Every structure is written in structure tokens, then in C-alpha cells.
Length: 86
Image (cartoon, rainbow, N blue to C red):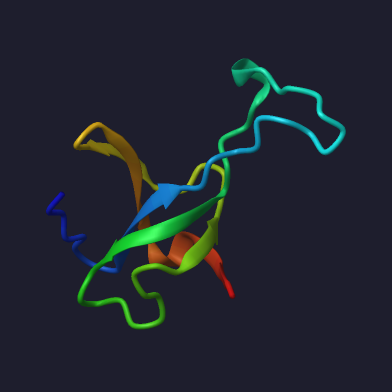
């Protein structure tokens, strides 16, 4: 993959949502919500406070979906990022 975000944007790959609850109940696909956490895959040259590899939290409807090499990603403006998980 060769994608460079422009402006103050980052490319994020969503983290996988759990398929089972702690008690062992399997969650069907249609009952899952899209996770609001992801790993930063690429960063624009204008972004200073987020790095590749960071795990970030973003709003439920943040970003634009993009498919590259068969994988789903989000292009998110840094203003839509809620924080970095350390």
C-alpha cells in the first residue's frame, strides 16, 4: 500500500471488535457496532501530535472509508480524533 494523507489527516485501520462477550456469548455480525478505535497507518506531513502506530479513539461517524489492497481504512482529520491510547 502506498497512500499519503494530505492536509491534517491520518489513515487509520479500525481495531477488530470482539466477537464474544466475557461470559462467552457470541455476538452476531449484525449486532456489532463499528469500533471507534484504530491504529494509525499513515500520517500527513502536516500532522505533529500523532504518529504511525499510535492507537487512536475517534467519533462514531468520523472519517471517510477507503479500501486499499482489499483492506478497509478510514481517512480522518486530526480534529475528529478524540485522543491517543497510551
